[in-house]
Image (tube, rainbow over all chains, first blue to last red; front, side):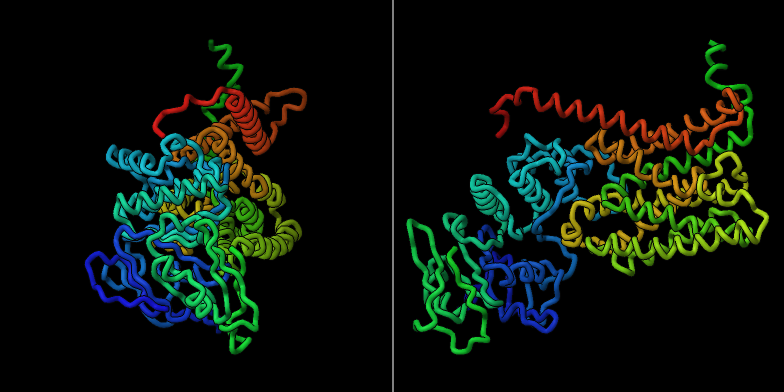
Length: 282
Length: 302
């Protein structure tokens, strides 16, 4: 299921239009299309190897697509243009590194500039505001390497947001977080999306933590995507077609379980060298 | 008072021309190494810095063979090594040690040959000692402009790339996303580190130059969490160790029983190490008392 775009509104922040990516002879993404508007919170859901990171890198302009294009704020994606905040996957922060949380947030503003920064009151105030916005003001002077996983995510989110982007991309920000930090980071991002009218696209392999706040879901399986609201996409028919294999979507206490079906059930793959049967319980 | 001064500064210290040159050349090398050392340690490239020191032996011993100042050999081979390390792939986390190890091994092989020729084919008997352990008191004044020029190159790179280097030390992906040419800044940083190693190779010797690169920086990281302040501390610690080392080496000519004078490089490196131990002790005591301190009052901000 692909999303049609009947509206061409000035609200559109991100349009991914027919993106395909081949890397070393393998098709990683096939004709992926979806769009995001201001203030929308979207989950990019898929298991390991589904192509989530590749898609984020295409949107960032770090990987060139084989086909299709990406528009940000209505403009074609130009490499190294601003307007997109990014929180990469798995950053190892060294506790020995002499860098405070506020230094890392400040680098989000001018880390690409040459020369030594001059002390500036407006810069300091902006950093302070951003630390407060993500609830990091209490550990602004701590070394980034000494912060917990959830605290580091807050600081990285502030780093990504301080330059005022219209789009915020986060690659697996919930990985390795305990349940409480996970909920805190998710509700923080949902609040930021609404308050600052930023479109947030967050990749995760677990859909349930995002269900309460997610406006859109982009579901990736074997390089293909289905997008829409969670109730439109996370359904047995849609996901079975996407996986090319029968899967069952089961709702238990407002949680969704995606379970692999048996091979003899309707919707089983016609050919076995199609996508691997990725389906498993979430 | 004057007795005390005489006790600290043995006669003739301030009038001695070799001391003047050592104070200037050693001081400049220490400041540059201290500053680039912070980048080296933050970027996890201490092993590369160490390899530059080893590879400088190759250039230094080669310079003696063809009769030019060793500084040209030190800088030439270590900058070349920086380029080769980048080509082999020092950017990849796993390629890093591999690239460094291959280049270092090849360099040391040549050094073995050159040092052999230095001692057998030429009459420069002190070459090996000078290259390995430095020559702070016998630096020719004509080299000072070269030292200053090299320093400006290394410090210029560090100053211009300060923020991009900080950011790419945190994460190459973050730097990429900001449009920073990560590979180019990485190579330029390696070149600056190579140049700074060649300066301290001249003053305290090739095999000891790592101490001046990594030691003050490692000490500074114990003292502060602010990147700018860490750089300032590192430069200051390197300078302090070098100048104090020069003083002690000069004074040691008057020490019993031999009254021979001890090598200046020994003093510098030992002082760097003692500074590090002191800072480590102080910071571990600090974190222990912080851990025992009551938690800050709740309800601020939040």
